[in-house]
Image (cartoon, rainbow, N blue to C red; front, side):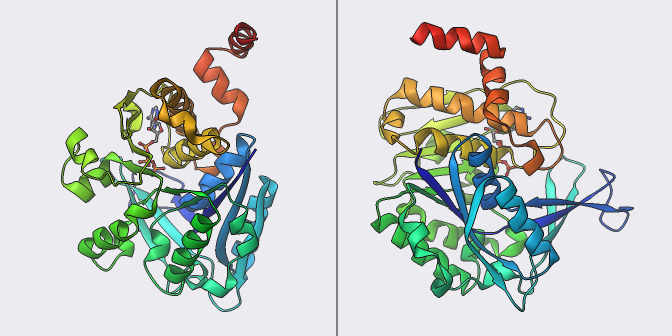
Length: 329
Ligand code: ATP
């Protein structure tokens, strides 16, 4: 299969051992490796695809641990750099009473912010069939220039560009700046995924009209994820919704990244599948199943599904899936 290269931050979330308490009240914290672009790369590999991650880590124990997690999960680390001065990024996460996550970041600056254009592995970027990124890497220099350069090189080499803004408001100087910078690279992407909260942040509303106001001429597919409700899809010719699956949710971290990983793997070899509505709905069914499964376990990376798990959820049981395959032969 084709290669999916994901660019951006990889960090460690520190999650309280007890939920529903403030950071000050938390008796202890568990390390939860993450960073949306890294999660996407691991999601792809877990499903059997080829993935690489590009980003910078601190030359410290946490940085080496994160690089190890990439390779243990069969994600290429050939685009990973280590900074000799700055530390690996950390974030302390609390679950608010309304179920939303709140982040407190330690980035002053952290290694991920210090990736320079010169440090990019251009050979790797030119091999990408899909190049995926978020918006956190746009916040400060020199990482911002590295991000823009990598996008340009990937596009020139013929990659499909995939964008999941992954808004983290506390990292931006202001909401206005976040909106401006997130939109500054909007029209470069071929595929864009936003959550319903991000749609509201960008347009002020959550409905078909507001989603369609985000359309741009070169876009092939726009997705809005709706948590347990599934997702909405928009293309030049049609739009609709795909429901998710009922599961026992314990922690939604990484659901969006699993969704994106599955989607990108489905389209990496032939994205003409998304031009036809039935084909796209089938692709999104699997993406929703991946998101749903990811919510059934604590943490993002440990919860990302394998292909048999997804097939089981979509087709009821593995044997039902085998029967389904036989009908196709
Ligand atoms: P993230 O928390 O990773 O930032 P997100 O907000 O980008 O996630 P979500 O909408 O939470 O994305 O989830 C992505 C997809 O995962 C949804 O479109 C849905 O298909 C599936 N999903 C998420 N939460 C649930 C749930 N509680 N039950 C079933 N499916 C879910």
